[in-house]
Image 1 (spheres, rainbow, N blue to C red):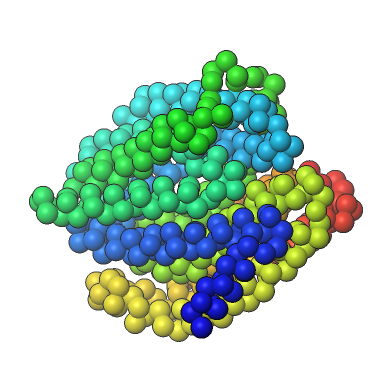
Image 2: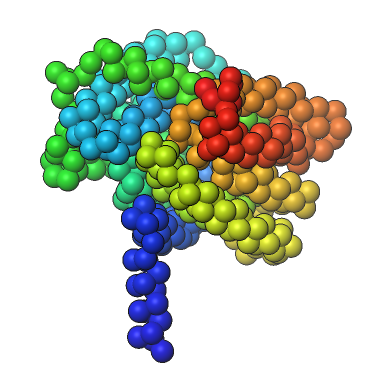
Length: 455
């Protein structure tokens, strides 16, 4: 029976279209990696809270969510390179692929230098204690912490292009492995800090953000000296006309990223300002808990972005339709799993973080709904992103980001829903996309897309 099981498993992962086989193998590897990542992530939460305290942890989460917006500095260059590299590979043009990579690295390096310079000039005039609603005596430490975290996050943005290249090369599992290694090293570093004395936001920030830049730097040196040597970036290969091509698509991704950041990262800031940094902690506990389901679904979706790009270039609509149908069926199973997660949420929270953090039932319910809305939309958005036809998504996301902020304040404060109202607002803001994206995908596949649907 065991031999039969192994044989059946081997057939499953070797049969079908080459694109499908590669996606299956990536999904399997990603599940294994993400399972360990989830375990490490879960261990990080109580360990970090133990090292700091609930308020300091809330400050840390809010600060990193604000500074994390540094990812916008690539002006969509990463996603632009991802699509253009995949298109060049689909046409078997390695020279063009290397040119896209070189142009992206040079442009990104320039943005990083400018961003760090500007931030270091402006930072002394920012009152981080006020921004984070933290005790005034922490202002000096928070200013220094913000500078260190920002610099490391900028460097990570540049070095992380190796991960984008791996995803574009349909090897997302290796990219995820780098993220896992970063989390494991962060876990070890925080554990070492807990043994070295009282909690320090600065030491925590330096260790965690420093590792987030160091790991992709080492990986870049390793892979460009070996597997990706044919694509080694070179300044002489960077070309202005290709930068414009990358930017044309990239700027749209950039604006889209801004809207997404407002939708997904404004929650911590809104909660901090309305209820204090201590309330960010239960919000993020629920977010990480239901993030398990979201992460599992993203694992399945990840290989499809680049695969969709290749299939769309080659006009393989049959494969696209079959793949999308299977993803919709998987979503139905996910919905059942999320329902179970809602029912057992409170006992899980108590086992995970103890009695020190209380997560409202309503917050768990809406967080589950939010995850399902996001997963359903992504089934179609990954295809749309792969084709680069994101103008409608851009406009809809800008509207959603504005609606999200207004609704979050109204529901959380004026209606008294608290943190639950913040998540409910996000659900309402994202709901129209559940209808828009399936319609756009159908139009693109049939060739009937016109106007904003085809841009």
